[in-house]
Length: 218
Ligand SMILES: Nc1nc2c(ncn2[C@@H]2O[C@H](COP(=O)(O)OP(=O)(O)O)[C@@H](O)[C@H]2O)c(=O)[nH]1
Ligand SMILES: [Mg+2]
Image 1 (cartoon, helix red, strand yellow):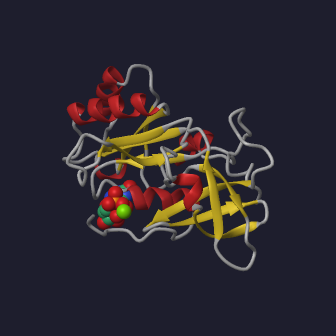
Image 2 (tube, rainbow, N blue to C red):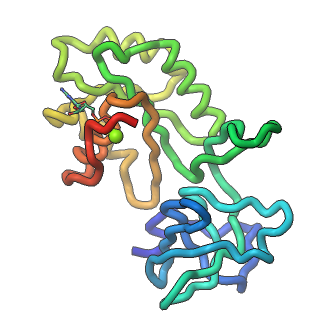
Image 3 (tube, rainbow, N blue to C red):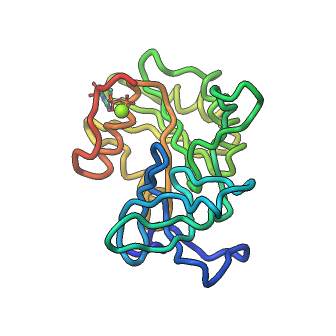
């Protein structure tokens, strides 16, 4: 895999000649898992490059780094984001925005077709997503649990302002093929939805493999 397979396109703002492009696939405690054309590994920030106002990367960010094949790579620059989720940092007493994830193309807004279906919540998810810069895709889950789901498709469609609405079952596989246009090389999607709506199950069903543990309450 190359960094282009992960969605990288070079931007005008980049300092060419300074390191190589990479994508952050996970970020925790100052350590960043990265993928680039040379391979994958762990990176840390180059302190001098992040002293003033330079925003540290989050999961999904494209960066430029000095690749180290035998140890930690050094991140030199966070590249401009095409989309991101932000919230007010609960740890900062001030009103600082904290970026949670970056550079996704689609946001799957999941609601399961039992007690979870709620038009108000869907409206909140849609507003969050429009604000992020990515495209919302409404995904009603667990269609196998009820006989007819047309009514829910209609209700979701009424508030979705043109965003596509799909109904799927991770259990039976029904409707999953409708999601393949969004799940393509070089595109990134994120899942948004309450605990238990079937996010992990959907990932596993789309991957055809057990990538995520299911049933955990988080
Ligand atoms: N009947 C049915 N159950 C499902 C479906 N998808 C997930 N579940 C169940 O719902 C529970 C929560 O699923 P999970 O994927 O862990 O939800 P998450 O918390 O959003 O990641 C688990 O017990 C799953 O087996 C589905 O399409 N149909
Ligand atoms: Mg889960």
